Image: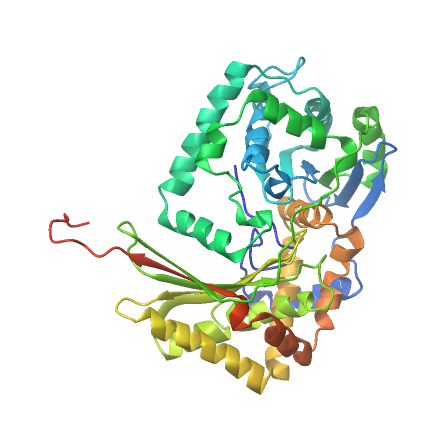
Length: 466
């Protein structure tokens, strides 16, 4: 199961887009004191002697827990020519050990009333189970077992490689938008491996063998390269002896430094245009390389979070109001920014031109809104409204055990700390209008832009009706 990187507290990635309504206003106002004090989630953390980082967030409303192990390795850590091997190994992790035969892991979780899954991103790979508190030790023991004892045959590997190839066909090759995204990413990053698809290029997947997957596993799947998170009906004091019992005996090993190729200066605007007969309506996008929280020498990342909301954070945003409501030239418009990546990320703007509208007019309207923001600035009321919405979604996130794990897992595998997560709302609150404008000026520069246009293919005279 391949997913995009999680984005702490953003309306992108896995954070649900939950807009404020009057009925919950009092709840939000009553809960902001804890957020402003830095007690966003109340996480506790400790590290075992073998280097395994452990994070606990207590939530005692129901006798259940979300148990997860995240590894600090993903698709951007693969060797050249092996795109997709991190995702391939994610599949192989369910093929068993000497004590848990192939296919039994998920069955055991299910028999005990739980659910499980896994995901791969450019920066991490994660495995999780939702289970009753009194069955927690069952999944802890199995997860610790497969961290060091994974075993699978050549036959198992070849069979699962065919499964991954079919996943690529169904989720990427059969979806014009997914194919187009691959081309845009490849144009956006000139050198960095974020340009590669997480699932991998088909010809490289076909070249995988069992030894390549096992080598990747033995290199990166070690306790000192992992984060264990348990969110739910448990305290750190209760979890510590369990973590010691099941994980402390696992041996640490040196892990290669994340020495990834970095981006050279981007000096030329680029355009990517693709037509496909399966596309019903045009789609327009523009992306810019931008700093992540970890790679932010000029201090723009937090302001980019706020800028995302102002420009494209839902129906009250500037782009939606201008393009959809006022000019009526688009059916949708918005912005995306993922600051929770290990290396520099992407600030993206998107729009779906309305039927009959000229994509060039949409592009011009977007550029006009960016110019207006840079020239006229951001008003106090607009800034306050956007910050209030961000704060509200932070509070809503505390209701989801899964979402809390996504937030901490994404941050900790991207080189951030527990305190970075807990203090994020306070730091967002300190962002000024001048900082937002400065970030827009610095980042949204034409020479850094990759503009994408996905278009319906023109029907030929002999084409059958779609």
